[in-house]
Every structure is written in structure tokens, then in C-alpha cells.
Image (cartoon, rainbow over all chains, first blue to last red):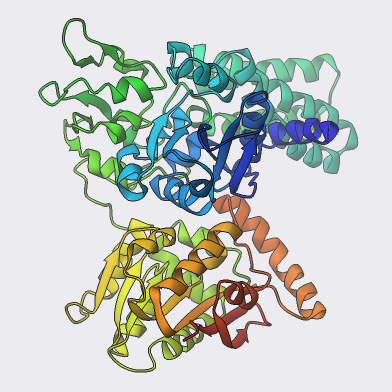
Length: 367
Length: 219
């Protein structure tokens, strides 16, 4: 079992760009009773195993909701883990027969897709958004279900960067290696190495590059690769192969870079210019935005029950704050200052390229 | 060609769902829809509960036959297409509800003469499907009919092999494009029976891969 776990962990980390669904339903963790906490997550196998690992020593009920077999944040943003799926899971998993309370803890990153108030209206479960990361759940439960700042914010540190690099390195290395081997077997190893190095380099330097970063990154990669071919005494074909590989790899790797990192909003469309705005008149200090913002954009104001949109430059436009605010005090605004209504953000999710099927005035674009 | 694995991709784009489904099923989907409507709305004025109505293809046929339909779908964009399709329906003929099938327990018990589930049960997990089928039985009056159409696993070994061959590449493609694929139900009639229905008939199309099960809530 342990060996299988490790093997799956490696496989799923390397190929996390494809879905890894696991059967939705109820999983008892430890020896849970009728008053044990109920945790909900999506049916991404990697996540479910990590949550179960993090919960060792804890007695709880884990409800796995159908979420397309992808990670919680993407599933929530894309409409695969929304109010519907959470209601469905809470009602059909059998958890209602096992516990004598109606309080469910959801991953915080589900807040962009799951409307807490709507879940409670539709199936009488009270939903709270717990920590971003599974490993913080025991601390969160032990601390009276209170989140520290660290539990509330996404990180993009060494481990997260390596994970993303692995996710892109594995498939690109397989493709370039196969294509190289078809042309000339000796091309395969350097192309595989190039894919691995580029993926790692991307996730460690790209967000720190200035200005035309794709050009800078691609240029540097090309220069280094061609120098390596020259040092190895490669022929014309090797130079051509290296150049083509670098250009294609950089294009593929940087294509959805912002969508692959937790620190930049997906950026293909005019919607990347949307700005989060706070209507001070409507803010009554519910603090749901402060509670669910994974980027720490909000601060509680001193002496008055209101928030400040203190760090809006960090916003990745996930929309969690807009979706959760009961006062509709938050909304997006486009470059022309047109408002996108909260109801629109709640209704229309992001597609795979990070685009919402709405324009700024809330109208649907022609199909 | 013609497995339903790509159905999931079509669902991500409601505006091309109908044309895509016709193409995927070599036109058979229209015949299946007609068979479902015929079985569910045998008489005019019947009250029908339809779960997973999607773009309203079956809903429209039911309304044409004079039924009054309560149609649920969780996807607002699918419902938009359905509303547009039935814009000319008589007032009161359709009630649209943006809800999941698991929420039909909020509807009146024994409040319907028939229930329809068109190509939506296979999207559910086994546990969810069992819950929904049990709840459907409770929404029907005794003697009420359930008509379920869905992608199923073929019965004969030869057909299953052929199915696997045809479906494999499409499932892979659907996986790549939509990040998901459909899950044919192993024993639709058996699951329907397990939920307390009496199965009356089962018809199959497309080399045994598309089934229409007609069942009845015992009197």
C-alpha cells in the first residue's frame, strides 16, 4: 500500500495536468462519531490522498464531491466544484445519516465556485472555508476552527514551484524525447534534458523577469542551447533541432504560465484588465472577502467594521471575494470602468483558458 | 466514431451540444429522444419530471405531446439554450429549475405521472445515482413510469470488444479536450430495479451502447 501510494504520488505529480478522478462519496477518517467534523473536498485523487495523509490522528468525515477529477482551485473556478456539486455530495454521500450536526468545512480555494449561503439555503448545511492547504487542517481543527494568516494565503515557494515544474517537465520531456529519437536517437537525451531544464527554469525565474519576459526567457534559452550544441560539436541538423525545440518549448511552457501559478491571473483576454473594486458604502464588515482571499488583498480597517482593499495589485481575479460577499460590495470593473455584477461572476465560471463567458456589461458574447 | 465519450466536451459548449450529439450518435440520438418521449408522454396532460434536461431536446418532444414538464438542469448555460428552444411553448407547459438531480426531494412526493432521465445518470457517481433513482421513485405516483436513456456497456463480449476499440481513442481525445469523459453504466436496468422500480422494457441502439429503460413505480 505504501509503495503504491508513493508510485501514485510521483505519477500524479508528473502528470497533474490531466485529471485523476477518484470515486466521490464518504470516507471515514480515523474513528469518527456523530459530532466529528465534516470536511469536503473535490474528487482529485492526489488531493484526496494528501488530505487523508494530513488527517492522520484526526477523527473526521471526509466527503469527496464530484469535481471532474481536477484540483480544487481549478475545479471551483471552472464550475466543476460549485454549489451544485457540494449540495449533491452532502445530500447523496450518506453523511447526513452519520452526523448530528450540519456544519461542513470546505477548502478555502473552493470559495470562488461554492456559494456558502446558497449551500445553506439549499440543503441546510452551514459551510465554512477552512485552510488553503490540507496540511493545515489538523491545526485549524485543534485551534477551534480559526485560520491563521498563513492558513489563508497561497504560497509559491520551493515545493510549489518544483511541483509545477515537474507537471510541465514530464509531458514535454516525453514529447521532445520521442520526436528527437525518431529523427536521430542521439538527439533524445539532450532534448529531454532541455525540456526538464526549461520547465524548472521557468518556474523559478519567470515571475521575476522584467518587461518582455517571454522574449528574455526565450532568448536566453536559445543562446544557452545553441552554445551547448556548439560545445558538443553538433552539426547543422543539431543546431536547427535545438532552435526549433527551444522556440516550441518556450511557446508551450509560457502559453498558460499565469494560469499555472497561484500568483498571476490567467491572462489571455481583455478580462486580464478587470480590476477588483470595493463599494465602501455597501461594506458592512462581514469580512468574508478577507477570509477567502488567497492573495491577502484585504485588510480589516482599524476602529470601524469595514475592509480596505489594501493590496489590489496582488489580485488574480479568482472572484472568491465577489462570490462570497453577502452585501454585493465587491465587483470587477473593466478598463472603461464598466461594472461586472457579482451575480454574473457567481453564474459564469472560467473556461480552460481562464476566460469568463461574459463581457464587462454582464452581457453574454455571441456564441 | 460514434462513442459518447466526447459528450463531455459538448457539454462544455452548450451552443454546439445538439449538433455534436447528432454527429456522435450518427443521428440515433433523435430516435432515442423520440422513443423516450413516446414512453413517458403516452397520454396528453401527464405531469413529467425531467432531470438533466440539458438543451431541452426531450423536453420539447414531451411538450409537443401535450405533457406538462418540470425540467431540471444544474447548468445555467444549458438551460438558456433550453429556454430559447421552448420559447414558443404554451404558457405553463414547462417549469425550468436550475438545480441538481439530488435536489428533487424538495419536489412534491407522488406529484408526477412520469419521470425522464436523458443521458444524465451516467454523469453521476454510483452513490449519487442510487440516491437520485430512489428519490425519483418517491416523486412518482404509484404506477408512474420512469424512462431512462443512457450510455451503457454492451451485453455481448463481441460488442464490448468492438465498443472498447471504438471508444478508446475518443475517450482519450475527450480527456485531452474536456478533461473528462463519460462513464457508461454497467447495469442500468439493474440499478433502476434496485431503486424499487419494476423494469418493463429495455431497448438498445448503437451496437448495444445506448439503452432506453422503461420502468414503473409499483402500485
